Image (tube, rainbow, N blue to C red):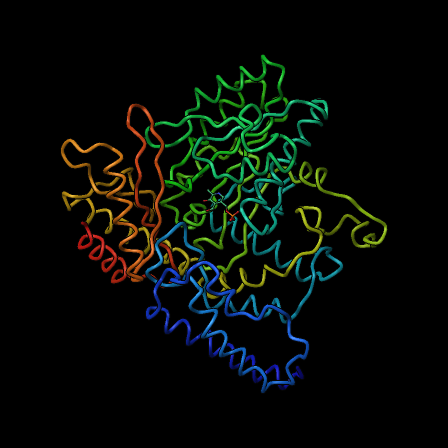
Length: 493
Ligand code: PLP
């Protein structure tokens, strides 16, 4: 495409996206295609001839409407309440566009100084906005931050940094390493342990210990302590704890302070043990001072990560990873082949973010975060979170007022786990089945989309199938939440 052709098509594509946003409420939220329904409309073989300039793009715009749109679940629909949100916003989309248009690859400071220095600065802004301690910022002697693609990558790099530090403290490289998390932790903790060879497969409960929780689904620190001591007695090396703040299932928070105290009380901390906080979703709420209780106990934390791409108006992918021990991270991840050597890196005066992540290459993701922070400002971000939390409170109150329903665990920020109550004498499986049917009925309507979880049996309460109302899409307003509740209430069989 010539620059002029690109300009015309670019304007048209931006128009298409703006029209898409305006049309969002007219689509069924969950895609209604059957498996293979999209693939069957695509040619089996790649085109031999390319398009001759701009005119040929008519076909592409047509295919977007006819093939791609029906195969989408509309994550940006204001009636999307499933999983956790994956926020997009105008400023972030423009940042993505610019990043693609510039096409720089910021693996080293010297391969685009602006990519590195902007990233460092916006992450320091974000640390200030979320109230993270000073020693997690780039301006501190030992800390720093980096944009990872996802929370899963953040957990993986934290784990390898942890192992590096434990080795520095004298643990042999071939130790039997053990990592800990609660039963509610995201599966990415286990996957990280599998990737770095700590766990030998997904069933390895000897090297990834999932600690039972309280009735509110936060890790029980006394069980963590007992398990760490058992592992030490067995000659294993406890080296990593992942505390979840805002669990995927129910938004539960592990008691970070108590977990840090356990690590300090056992020999784990003195031998280099690392505490990582996975706040993938809930971390965004830290922009509001009233939610900073989530940060209690940060003095015992070595790294924390959250996803602006979930609930902070920044398009996927964008994970903000902070550590107060950047040396451990760099020692674990730096490898310098000759072809990457350069004077700036050798001077020690610059950051090379390739040493902070798994891949070598990296996109200019800081642009979208920069645009978001400048466009909304701290006030706009706080208003975004507060409105969703307010809507969560509204939804929770409607559920509580309807005697057919119950709130299954106390609301966490804007996430409400709820279900149809058991009928008198009804066995648990039958209650679960009625809830499953209700979920399928409302999702099949196309008017909204929400997902479910199974809350583990704890402290005498049986396991429960519950519906999750995760409010947080960028365009969700009270009328959408109200309509969702009315649909649920009128769909009970
Ligand atoms: N951790 C928690 C608590 C999550 O809820 C999720 C996803 O929902 C993840 C990690 C994984 O996030 P990502 O897709 O960024 O790896």
